[in-house]
Length: 154
Image 1 (cartoon, rainbow, N blue to C red):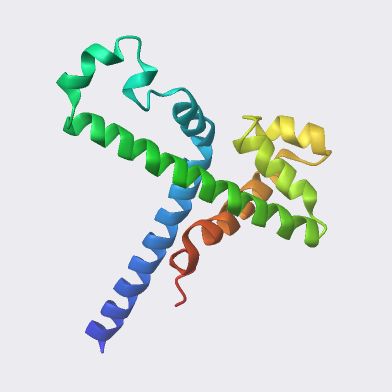
Image 2 (cartoon, helix red, strand yellow):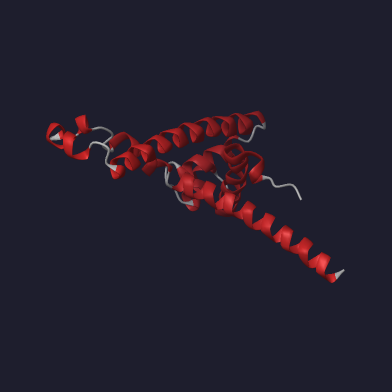
């Protein structure tokens, strides 16, 4: 009996850890969203973007590192599009629930880089409330971004 209970607890622990990791991944994505966008917009994508691209063309053709950079940029573009779509779903959900201030707090925090204290001032709430709203919407966005993996029913 004790062994079965231990196995059951271990399974629950794995599910909690996976859920926490998804939440942390969502936080990391949102904290770095602006940097990812800037990297996609300003990064070199083709030899034509470089000043001496013609000279380098023969040398770098088929270069694994350059292919890796281009694939990374493509993954970033796809991720940005996915985040943007999920953010629109989140916004629509919050407006439908008549809690648009939660969405504003979320975007102020992650996209505008405001502190919880500043958000509290702007939205006329406590910093603890602003922190709670950001955490709550990060969890909801996790479901939009990662689907059922973010829920992990017990």
